[in-house]
Length: 125
Image (cartoon, rainbow, N blue to C red):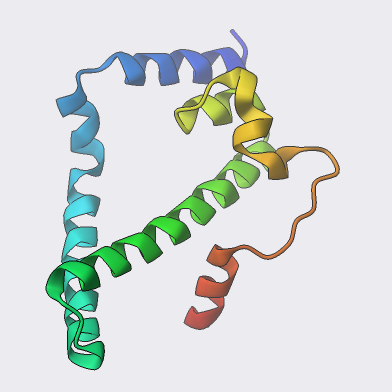
């Protein structure tokens, strides 16, 4: 069995697991993220007099945007390390037929401009 087939089978098996079992893999990171949203929102409330609800919404949306950019980067990295575009799409919850639509930067001659994750990572250096 090829590595591609093995990976496809593993992704299918993971998708067939009950939601509770899949959630268990990312429940703790989500709890850390939720605490971070609340902490950052508290700073926004102090600095800009935003309501708690709008501050949390703003922070969560910024994190969503960075997370989307991170997913795109991870897809590129996976393909660069030999994973098939179809399995990359499956891992991201997209149809294998739509891999290039979901990840346009995977096209052969796609522009690889800087992404939001690049800007965020630059602030950490």
